[in-house]
Structure formats: C-alpha cells, structure tokens
Image (tube, rainbow, N blue to C red):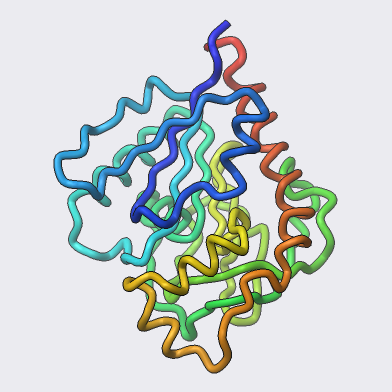
Length: 237
C-alpha cells in the first residue's frame, strides 16, 4: 500500500507548514508542495493527492493574480469531490472566496496573540471537540470573510467574527495560525512584505508568549485531521 499524499500550497517562501509538517510525516503521509506564485510553476494534478492544504500569505484573495484564481478552481474541484481541504489564514479566505463568499477588510488588523471563543458547533465537530471554551491563538491578518453557504461557524472573536468554519464534512478554514513556531513568528516580523504591519504595532510581538499552549492544543487537532484524511482515503491509496 502506498503512502497517502498531501499537497500544500505555499504563497510566499516564508509561510510554510510549520508544526504541521512533522505531524504529517510522523503520521505516515508523503508531503508535496505547490508554489504557483513562482513564475512558470507547473500546475499540480489534485487527483494525485488525498488532501490539500492552503497556507497563508501577505496578498489578498481580491488581488488580480492569475495563480490565485487557479488555486480557487482547484479548491472548487476538491470541494465537489469531497476531498479533505484545510485552509489557514489566506488559505481560509481562498476557500471562502472560491465557494462564493466575499472577502473584505476587517475593521481592525489582528497581529499577535488574541483570544478566540469556540461555538456550540465546535463541541460536536470531529476535530474541535474537547477544546476549551476559549483559547489564545496567533493572528496575522487584515481581512476577513463571510461564511460560505452551508458552512458551520466553529470559532469567533470580538475583533473578527469568523475565525474558523467547516464546510460539509471535509473542508476546514482557520483564520488564525495554529501552525506557527516562535522561530516562524520572529522570521515573519523581519520580512520586507510584513514591515508595514510591524511598524503599526503599538507593542512588539512576543514570538514565544503562548507557543507551548498553542502546540499543546493544536497538535492533537492536526493529528485528528490526519486520522480523518486516512479514514477517507485508505481504500483509494
């Protein structure tokens, strides 16, 4: 039996899978990457993979970028096929936009550590069940999205209502960044693309402020996601 394959879409070199990648590898998955933002990047064949992950990035889904439109077409195809899809930050906005929901500027930027609250639907969700009522997560975004038709809201906050959703049984969008490590956060703060956001901060971001708790809460969620992907694809690989 061959190993299940996961395809991760990156949008800039410095926003990768973070802590998700070692979990995928430890769970027996083969991890491939798609970097469609690069000139002349070969388009991947989603049919070759058992699940898709769409990562973050400093651009907007509303930008006139042909490669973003290609990613949205891949998302729509995956949703129609019932393929597991996970979107983080920009990735969640791409899922929302691809499935007909508008993406727009959030009233405030969220950059740093902020509290979110899980909804009653999260208590019955296969990935989110058992999580505390509230948790602090890492954020870096200036836009937000409406929920796609039929999506369940799983997490919310006072500063940004739509923090996490599930569409159908296999598609998840997370506005926040549960994948980050302290080293990733420190690197993001040094990137030229992020310097404008960093200058606007009243206090510097502490990369390690809640990192141990982030790993404690979200690593098991990623492991449950791996189990869900495996249960869906075991007969197909």
